Image (cartoon, rainbow, N blue to C red; front, side, top):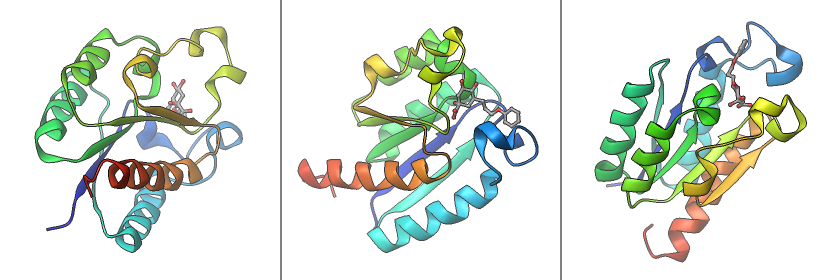
Length: 150
Ligand code: CA2
């Protein structure tokens, strides 16, 4: 059975492609998911791609992914900048986590400069729009190979 990577998306990411294309790009989350399916298929891994507007649901998914998955890629949206609950859920787990953002949050408002995810993530990818999802899948596969987990 193929190794699974969870790709978790936080609040408002379901609105991608409808507003603010200058910041987040013109692709919808569904478009991004399709590309992720293609890329992961080529790399021989399977993905579980999800989005929620609810912090507790994301906590549940992180806990589940820690049992069912080899790694987690998470774009926590605005919860990145506020959520100690997501920080604690990641910290409690043992699979590698890659933090992902479409935009370069450090080039934006001050309140986006703080991340509660970064201190518990293996690495961070940001500023490449939807292409960042492909980069994150590739980075996760390289990481898993290097630890003989793939
Ligand atoms: O750059 C990213 O990926 C973010 O995680 C996106 C979040 C933002 O709060 C983070 O600071 C950075 C926002 C999610 C999408 O929000 C939309 C709002 C309006 C229209 C489309 C998307």
